[in-house]
Length: 258
Image: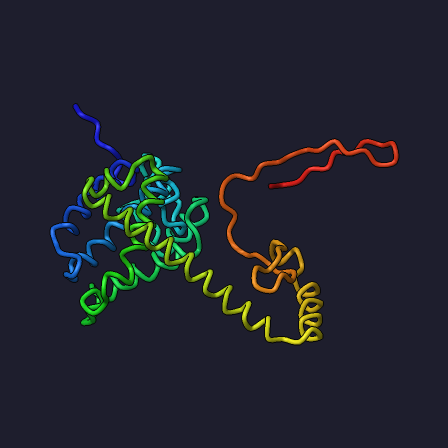
C-alpha cells in the first residue's frame, strides 16, 4: 500500500501550488482569472515554505489538537475537524522564518490575498481592473524566494518558459528599484546643496543626536554625508567574531556580531 503525504506537508502543498500554477497559465496575464489563480499559488507556496520547517507551524494556535493533527497524531476530541492558521497569520510567520522574506514581500502578499478575498467575497473585480504590470514582477520575486526556501525553483513551479520570463521580470524590478533609489538620493542631494553652511551644520548636529544606535544601524547618508539610521530586517545568519585585544597589559575578548 502506497503511503500518501500529509495534507499539510511541504510535498502536498507544493504539488497543489503546481496545480494552481497550471490553472493560472491557462489564461493570458490580461485575464482576471490569471490574477485570481496567482493568489492561490501564493498561498500554497507560503504554506509549503512554513511546512518545510514543520507542519505544526501551520496549525491554528487556538486549539492544540490542530498541532496534534499536523504532527500526524490522532485527536481524542469529539467531532474534531483540523483547522490551520489564517493566511494573514501565516504571512507573518513566514516573514519571521525566512531570512530572504522581507516586510516588503509580506506587505505584497497581504495585498494580493486581500485582492483575492475581494474577488471571491464581493461584487468587486480587482484583478479585472488592475494591470498585471503593477503586481506580476513582485509576485514572481516572492515565488522565487519561497520556492528556494523549500529546495524548489521557478522552473519546477511554472515550467522553463514561464520561469525565464519571470526572471526577466524580477531583474527589471530590481533595476527599477535601484534607479528609484538613485533618483531619491539625487533629489535629496540637490536640496542639501541649496542649504547654507549654518543650516547644514545644524542639520548634521541634529542627525547625530537623533540617530541613536538602538533605533537602527548608524551609517553615513549618501545624500548629505551626515549620520543616518539604516533600518530593516537582518538577512542571513549572524556571524560572531572574537578578537583578542590587549588593553593595559590585560587580555579581553571583544565579540561583535556581523
